[in-house]
Length: 473
Ligand SMILES: Nc1ncnc2c1ncn2[C@@H]1O[C@H](COP(=O)(O)OP(=O)(O)OP(=O)(O)O)[C@@H](O)[C@H]1O
Ligand SMILES: [Mg+2]
Image 1: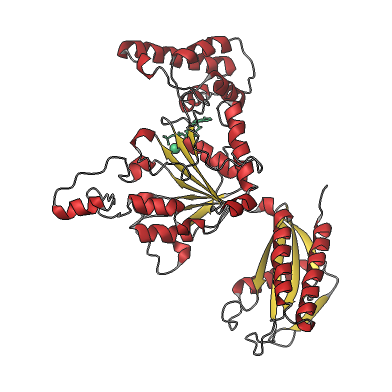
Image 2: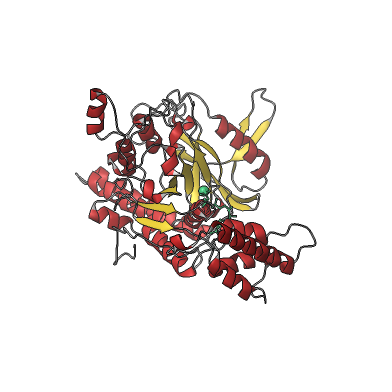
């Protein structure tokens, strides 16, 4: 069933009617405030579940109610110029000099327009302060302008924290946002298709499992540990996850965080529906399983406290292991909800087991060297080739040589305008043969006998949140 803007506004009016009834009850039936609260709470939840649009309200007098919003004024000018010919009900205002008349949309008037290919609805409305005896708004009521558009047009953001930011009490400066435009998707990720499906199913189950998490008393978040050699697609997978879920990304640079308090503030100032990433967790801080040997008595005491500071190497960051553990699943970690936390590392064995234990990092995913399935996906993506007589040779070589998807991809890229699929596949074969020769010379190979190839996500499945009835695994 396709919902149109009109149908949604009908749903809005049903909800509005419920609210109105709630207000009537409240006025005439003692104790009915609870009923109204209930209707508001559940009505809001029901609409939020299925409502596919984003609504932004612009208040004419925000904050203290005395200063007129510049955003509101700009919208008024924009709408005045663009919509006065289309709106059916207009209101007229005389400007300062008393000579000219400015027309704008009347209250409750709605107009739709196409803005850079996106369908948007503008509505002018009034917000009558409820139950206030003294109004802060110049006209006893607040004037709103709101714009609604489909969720899919919202630009997603990539936030990073950086060293030396003087926050000045303003949360806005803790995270610097840029538009998130990474093109990686699960379709472009070279890995075993079955394992890929497992991950997408896991993510889908997670976003639908709000009620389940509430029921079991767990914060609505899920931890992924992605590990494997450089160039096997860990960062690409994070981008694919964010694109798949349509989440924002918070890329946390741990070495730039001053201490545990700052870490907590950063966490509090993230929003829900986001992927929180700490890349190369083993390099970020000395958070390995090896507790450091301290010399003095005082230091021994510190070690007894289980704190693991990296102040010896880098005095600017005093984030401790316990601070990070609290960050992941302490009381504050529940703020915002609906969050995926991802750690990446090249050396999973170096991490403190506490950091990646069940419940913290729920899913451990190994990304490894390129397998034939992975190669085929890359060949399709990079060369538009689904089958080729050179594939058999490549299959044999990939079984003998460990090459990361990043290297395979690089070899498949045309190096000149003349390079066709034959040439690119030939380049890859040469690179694989060279690597094979080097391996022979270095006499490497056998000891990593159990090494998995790309896509064979050897999941050291922690999966504490197996939610059969909700489908989360
Ligand atoms: N599994 C993969 N599927 C498709 N492309 C890949 C894959 N792995 C790597 N690549 C390609 O190689 C590039 C580097 O990959 P990526 O940054 O995801 O690796 P990484 O595992 O995060 O490496 P590092 O450990 O060095 O951070 C990507 O931009 C992508 O083009
Ligand atoms: Mg990476």
